[in-house]
Image (cartoon, rainbow, N blue to C red; front, side):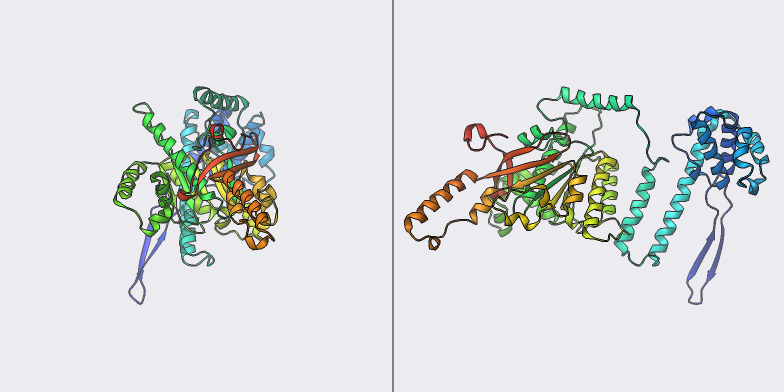
Length: 510
């Protein structure tokens, strides 16, 4: 790589501080650029060695980049690209005047060292581009730290710098591209083969809930799932149950893998409302069957504490990671997911909840609806980019409370248009017992004891039917059926589980 030697001048300010002034040329290799262009002009088939990762934007010399793009356009159109065919494009445009006009194309032919080395030349050019990008990112970080963007505080500047670095780390020189149909068919066949070899109804990652897995086939990569409900319905408890079950399934899969097989996978929970300690306490309460309320009050005995220790040892091995940063931005979340995917592997992301998030650093949405739209689009982009399911919890508007039937509908979603549009599945948690408790008859509301007793008995009968029951209403599912999944809910431990409808009677399966 051709580089000019660093020239450093040091001077001392009046206060004695040392100012280091450095002047360096950005990394570039003009010989490699010219040699690659010469190889392409000599034999257009050399383009196949660099077409999948190199573009004209990667060249340090803008003229060389323009020539590369012109060569690429003709080759991809099935036409010959050489100094003769390119003459018409460059002769009157003036692009080549700074480098000597059309004679420059002839000189490029003499700069060619060997066609077989075209791939190596391309990688050298791309590496120099990566280094120049790193310099630009570093300069931007320094300028922002000095106050170039006063709207960003220190934490936001860290997030912006991390996002830029990880975007560069995952950039392969392309903005995407087509997938051939035979490749797509092969991927579809691979999914079908996994489903064929698996027992039960789960193709994706299990939720730990039998009837939910039957409806959805598990959690599938690239899907954005919205789990919504009014306060006290158990959204966080259900999401935690799913995350815990998925992490346990990943741990079991890693343990059962053949020796020497490297399996990577983990679950990330972004808890914007509860702290990591509170979330861990909730999981511990559920697994140890000790009321979380008693844990907070310290009303536990030696036997229960010993059970805590035992359960903690078992849970400590779970590939579960909790980030409790309040009001985390979309860009920071994306960066942390990328980092976890690169280091530990990532299989599921849970966000609790999306109305508490902020959009990407530096964006200023004009309205709350637009802000939520940017967040849901960003979460869907994370799901697709990292090929993982993303479960985002959402609040519901108060209009639910004004209806006689409190079961949620899609229109009850706050800023519902964007959420419903971007989601692959929308699910609502509903517990009839919560609302029935508020409707307990009062004797003063009736003009006779008999009417009060009749109303009380009717209310008690409904309470018995709704006791420890919850509904998961699958209102939208892009790739499967909708319907209602009936679940068991134990309020003391905020624990969801499967409901045995065959032996207990009650609600019929939907």
